[in-house]
Length: 560
Ligand SMILES: CC(=O)N[C@H]1[C@@H](OP(=O)(O)O)O[C@H](CO)[C@@H](O)[C@@H]1O
Ligand SMILES: [Mg+2]
Image (cartoon, rainbow, N blue to C red; front, side):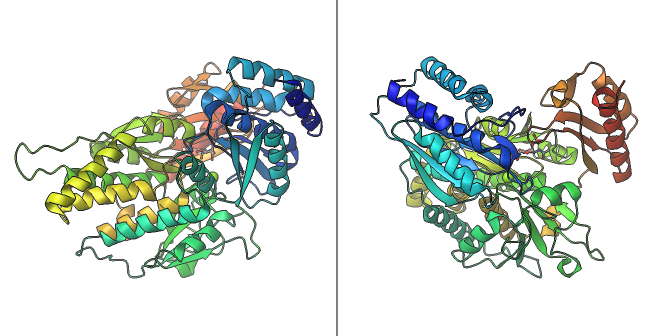
């Protein structure tokens, strides 16, 4: 680093002192904390984003959001050149940057890192960071802090893309680095045109049995509802009613949104007995998650939840069907078929019944730790990799080589059997790859794909929900003295530390028919999460409570 660079960093950094007595960690999905603590962190992540752009010679994204967390919280995360999460190799540097006590320490860290990573400041290439933020009131001033961080690297440019869903920002980074149109308008255009294409390819015989074909959306009082209202105008064929848009006085994520609905299994605000039987969907605060639900007859608060596992199952079923149509041979020894590897990725939170169902479909099911960064990485190993967290965060990834093969196959079929079922299957798969976000899970693309598949199959939400019956489950959280005392293995299904805790959990779980339980430290909140499953709701609740007590005995504040 030359002197000009050093003094620029020193000057700017002294205006962003880190908060006292707080240890920050990049966590499951970037840094998250009370917004008042984050000025310095976001400033420093701005520096990191510019360095990442220098290192990769690509456009990088920086998103300011705390997703489903409280409105008073905020957070920041990086989108890498392919639109995915920041490379895990850089996370320790992110942690060190965020926690550096003084500007001098910060500059020393940066100098050492730049040398180690061989990052050159030659100024020969553009250094660009796209910025986005959700609707949180603190977003505006944090965005300014991020801009200062980015521009404290000489020659780096910050481009404010405005208020966006998290997946929109990731999509824009992905598109920019492929030299494609990357404005919000391009995003809406891609989603709506691929949706219309899939709708046009629906077989004539499919007619939905749903008496009311309208969709009711809970926007979590966040950014997703408003964006969906813009998108809806381009769709023609789908009637969407959006509630909890955030414009009618509701508070972000308070009693609303995908996280609340999935964890509490009750209706969000502004939904109730008038909605019995309707197809409803909840987005989270930054619109990267979605869960469907319906209100059963006679209920005003209880719901039938159709969670991320069922969305995954619906997608897997559809993709599998299209792949098998595509590979049907018309003549023996015909060339051109390609056994695409289809795989699905889940976490330990996936309902046991969903994993059994997917295996029965003959699919390869992989388990990873919690967090999209892990699921995405695994899904990318397949030709078509579908990943979903139970809470509704997921997408379908298509490998570049499979897309190339599909395009060539579609062209070939166009000339020999245009309009055939096989050509339609190729077109459908290509359209799905454009509709569903290739960078990260996206509630808007996910929602449109669910809608089109339901129409394609002629299914109501009830028929979809009957794919399999969820095992009753319960999730709880426990405050402990030090959550890092829990260390897990085998995709978080086993706690290897503190010693003895897993044995205690096992002996409790063994008392329950179809019992399953695990604990792990949250990567976004200062808690230990407890998950339990059993054959009845009452049993799942009891098991979760007993395991909570075990956690408390081993790690709680009151232990002796
Ligand atoms: C059990 C659960 O829902 N965990 C969520 C939550 O992570 P934790 O590390 O569990 O706090 O937030 C992550 C980011 O949104 C999401 O990827 C993950 O699935
Ligand atoms: Mg989110």
